[in-house]
Image 1 (cartoon, helix red, strand yellow):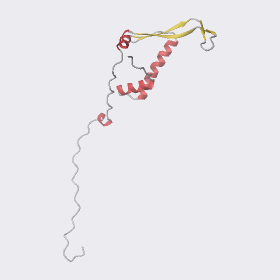
Image 2 (image 1 turned 45 degrees about the vertical axis):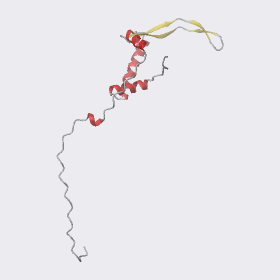
Image 3 (image 1 turned 135 degrees about the horizontal axis):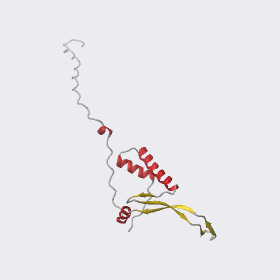
Length: 143
């Protein structure tokens, strides 16, 4: 039985990468967004993008065609357009064929004090003087 898939958002990826790399979410989000923007820009210019073992993105021209509106059954003309095609690379294809594997637990967060340099031992504090003791009271004295 195939496990039910779920949608992973950019926010979830940012959180996961930030946890794994111990970078801030702001930095990871900025880098990821710049990466996606660069891919989009290259494809808009008609360039082909290849990531070895991951896959290839390229733009293809789609010919104009006739289609049918499913509600009204009316025929409509679909104009020519450009579309992005992705072809998975060898390693991605192999990994997807293997199926899901359990995700490792993220590394525990390091406490800020663990990242600080070790402190020098401090000399012991001088003992605090005891308050003076009251003289013993004498019989018949009001004090």
